[in-house]
Length: 222
Image (tube, rainbow, N blue to C red; front, side, top):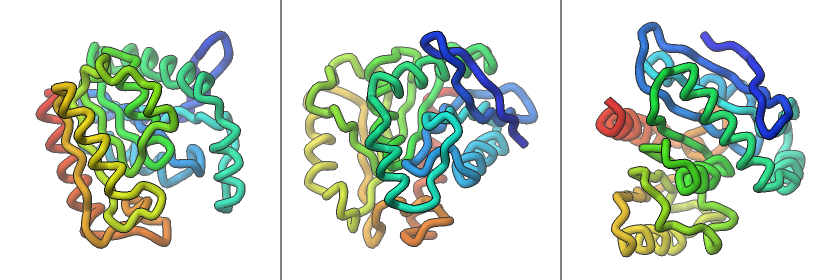
């Protein structure tokens, strides 16, 4: 359904996967897990296109895709936040141009979940942000007062990397600032519960999160 293309970000080419809907519709930026722009993330973009969204998934690793956790961890740690910010900002510009939509949404997973929130803080065109089990690496340094997007987050109660206490802390911080944010915690779900190719896939939580995400994005963007 989609195609690979390149855009210019901070003076260098940035690869991405774009899936177009059958009819003009709202736009969503899909941010990868630490594995890279693999077939699973492309399939998520295709699912969004099937639901009527322009869906763009930028390749933050510029061609590398991890096959094992150690490799994924290395690639994620090597990804500089300023480089990722440049790539994502360029991707936002491309998505706005392709979709002719002045306001977009962002959905990200794992590492991409944290980047989803960071991008929403830095780009006012982001009207809706949906992080799946992700908190920004630089959360303590972010100026959350600049967040204009509405937020719907999905987190697993059994996620050993992101404890429920961290989710509740972020929820309280955003609500204290008067932000429209709901961070949901799914019982019996762990990290990466949405990834149907992973060992932590949880069908019930995945289905509920997907349906809630579609309702949320349509309420905000349509």
